[in-house]
Length: 228
DNA sequence: AATCTGCCCAACCGCGTTGTC
DNA sequence: AGACAACGCGGTTGGGCAGAT
Image (cartoon, rainbow, N blue to C red; front, side, top):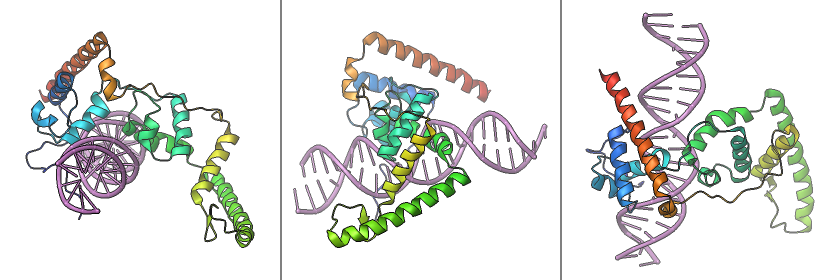
């Protein structure tokens, strides 16, 4: 029925990546670039599927990744973007150079979502607002439907598009809480794409390789310490 | 000190999309 | 046109960790 797994699981390693595997993947990509994810593990000497390699590179090893806590400004921007884009994490991430979709998604699910979770009182208020809106919409739409075909209306067979209501409610919350500005504008991302990676200065790249190397050797010391 | 509980996040899974033949 | 392969994305899982009991 469904699609076959991207690779047969036999003989392929899964789970957390070791520092040795990271080193192999980094070295390979730095020397050869990314041509075809499916062939990379074989050529780089890794017992992983291409998908796993891609994920590891994109979410963890990429040189332009910005790690660490999200600032309040970033959180506010994420909330704004989520209100307009929904769960399109890749789109949202494209507005944050150095942040990955996975990182933003995790942050949203573990932190921001809780921050936005309404209290019981707020829930009741929202529910009453929704029912009022629904009633109003039904009344006005009935009139409208008899007068016109209302083809572009948000009301389909008498039902309001709930997504619009939700967006509207979000907007309401944002406006009244004053926690973030409504004059937010989306900036063009200066995030370098993979195709542009060749423009990265050589000394910058070298600096990064050095830092990754030291990080990996530090990890190696830690891991061997644990093993001992 | 041992156990439990909840949180965080890296990694995986499966589906949709896109490209190629 | 459709079959297939590869990639990209969003949802979900599970292991490690910290704090609570």
